[in-house]
Image 1 (cartoon, helix red, strand yellow):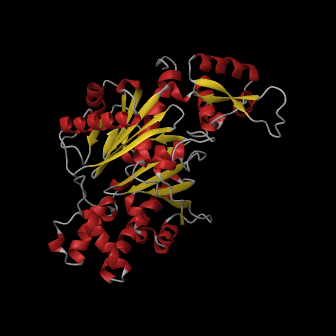
Image 2 (cartoon, rainbow, N blue to C red):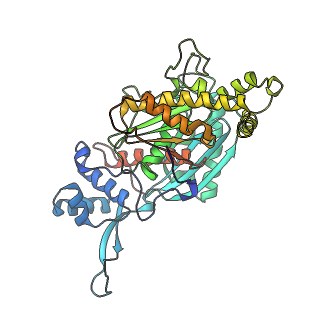
Image 3 (cartoon, rainbow, N blue to C red):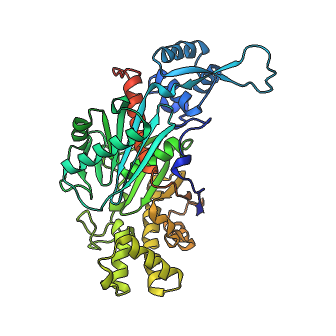
Length: 427
């Protein structure tokens, strides 16, 4: 198992290499050609027309016609591009780039202990970011909507823009979320179940809102800004207060037929096992998530006097004991690592991804991904004579989730502008 470069949210976002997935032409035949061209330009950052034609295997004349439409719509613009060995004589080379000011979107992530927000432009450049602590408690829908409203007002003030300058808002919450319908069927931060979250937030904000679960947001962040931009199939497993997974299939995030797939944390690893916060027993999450480690520490180390202590403080103490050689503390992390290995081996056997990315606050506890865990994955995965997929640890920082929510909003705006039968006015 290899640990990926430690990245933080301030370094996220496009540079000269653009943002968004690099999608091969043949895998996108169902998408409008004009949209394929636009997404190719955004992914590249800047690209000559002739290169677009070559990569999409279409005629230069077709590219010229469709890019002229995109320029007229205010979505793409011509930019100067230096030629190799530029002598300074003659007309400068011209490339295409996304007109960054065409649209602004916000991304918001609500979590158990912190809420984060970002605003990015249409090229994916970060305009402003914000993180606010919150008490870990379940909320009624009106309180949650108030929280989102306040967070959006604060991030717009920081960006020095009016709220109506935004074209869409992406929103992420933990739990079971139907992204297509915008419904939160269950979330640890909501009292009620089957909540029409997108509709309620849209009514308050007066803006289009797209909702997804937090694991999918991390996956979108990797797909748009990170290691997954050039991969066709990869998985992201998040380990924090819960265990989540997002999966990219053929360069697109996969949610299942009803939008509720990829719930790795709620796959069963032991019949009639430990109680999970979802109400069922034996879920992977009930053995790996932070509340599971806290439960084990309270019992194995007889820490009943610490039950009023925050989970973060308790886990830091448990980790310190493990590093100091405490056998009971080490066994707790070792057991959690074995269950994690079981879950990851199942992912390998089911999907055969090119890469598995482990992300989330708990990944700083290296006992969860020690060499023993890697060996366990190898032993549990099918023996095909090939090594298991590469596994990386990515520590992006808390604003990663909000960047994923912004990618969700960018994708929605792009679809609205360029998919057949839809139209959103360029600003």
